[in-house]
Length: 111
Image (cartoon, one colour):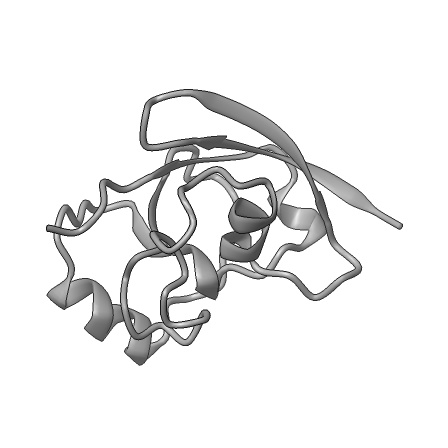
């Protein structure tokens, strides 16, 4: 098993450095949910289909190689609240070795 370290700042502003497995085909939203870093029912509401933006996060260290945004992700972020230039949907970021050291902050809950 190969784990990477990811730092996630929750909606209360607390930083959590967690181990994220690269060999389980997980995405960042699933890691956030598995560590219960957001209250149940407030993140990943659509199940990771890029259809709700409840998993929006801000990439704090932009030097990592992230996958390009899909059209679906761009469209969803166009409709979301609290969008910033570094906004991504965490369900669209697969956990890979290249993301070791990634730092993200969860966006506030939608209104």
